[in-house]
Length: 54
Image 1 (cartoon, rainbow, N blue to C red):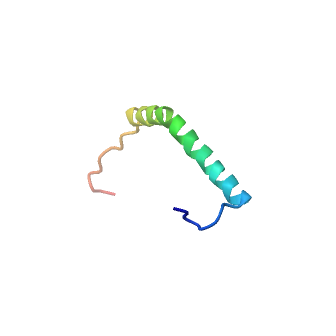
Image 2: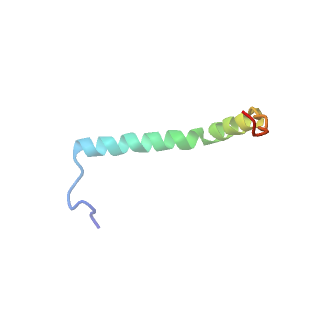
Image 3: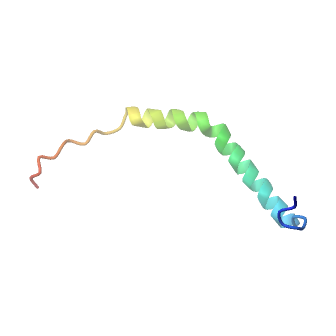
């Protein structure tokens, strides 16, 4: 089934190719991003509890 009913233009094909590269880069970075998130959580600042007085 042809979604557009026509071929992609060169510009559209280029855009799709760019998006695929970006998605692949995000997927490849996944483990490093997960590790960074865990490191940030482990070293997060704990705000002191407020007694309600300001």
